[in-house]
Length: 343
Ligand code: NAD
Ligand code: IPM
Ligand code: MN
Image (cartoon, rainbow, N blue to C red; front, side, top):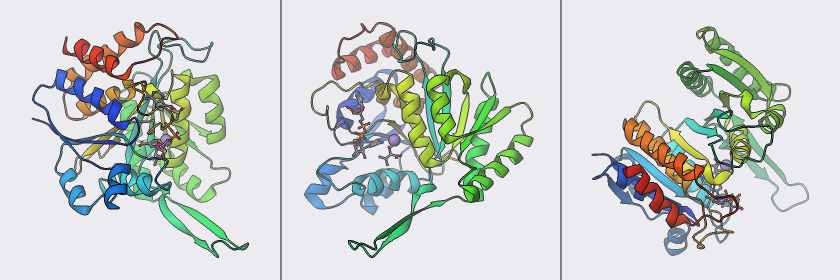
């Protein structure tokens, strides 16, 4: 039976993860879930973010389900870098998979888009780029202060994520990959990304391709999200574009993601795209659908395709039945989804 590590984390993380666990228990009875107490509370208590011993234990699971990390009482970056990014990097989760679709019944903000018309997936590079942490500060707190952040792009890292995007596109109906970068300004990394993209594209004559600069892609995601199938892009562009993709398909409360190590050398991690939402934490009003759909991605990754389909079908029913304007109650949604998915 699958062994899942659960890192509920901060803010609404525990609230939405509890619902995802209800749904997992409903579709995969006997699933072994082990909770790991990581995040702001532990940091305040012990000054630890992610002890090596915990990292070693996490590595022994089949997958990780994560809620959200980050808290206003902790300096920015301590948990985001020390916990979330550390896990993505340590477990070589280089495919950050972020699907977006407009579900029937969901009032998207765009009058021009009908349900079913948007069904895209962003394959965001997950271990390099500006997230690599290269850079530094000189002359801190003086008028001469200089801060640099360097974007790390390796041939190996770029090629493997582009290959994943093409392989995914080959399994989809429209078979199209859009490379998003900023080759007109970021000429070093941009050139590596586009040359690698062209080379991999040449091996996939059945997949159509296009290139867009990231500023244009941000615009087209709002004006014509229908045009996208698979989008492959670097770590930071993918971070920003997937919040936009979430917003145009009904909001961040519905957006799921998988941080995937395709080789299975390390566990993959599944988490909502959203953060800890301190503004609504503790109120029981966070939408758990993003966490539940992340659990569906987890099930798919672990080979439980039927269970994943039942979870998606439960979400489809829930969303189709939502009355406009009625606030979400986190635990009630979780109960309904678990009952629907159990069948
Ligand atoms: P956020 O995603 O937490 O919140 C942005 C807005 O979306 C808020 O108004 C919030 O209430 C709303 N929202 C988010 N999830 C929702 C849900 N499930 N249902 C309803 N509304 C929801 O982003 P932020 O405010 O920029 O960041 C808050 C903290 O979370 C920061 O510490 C940040 O670093 C961290 N963060 C963590 C992750 C993660 O763990 N993967 C992702 C993003 C941000
Ligand atoms: C996300 C988040 C993270 C990211 C932060 C919290 C490190 O915004 O998962 O999208 O930038 O990847
Ligand atoms: Mn983000």
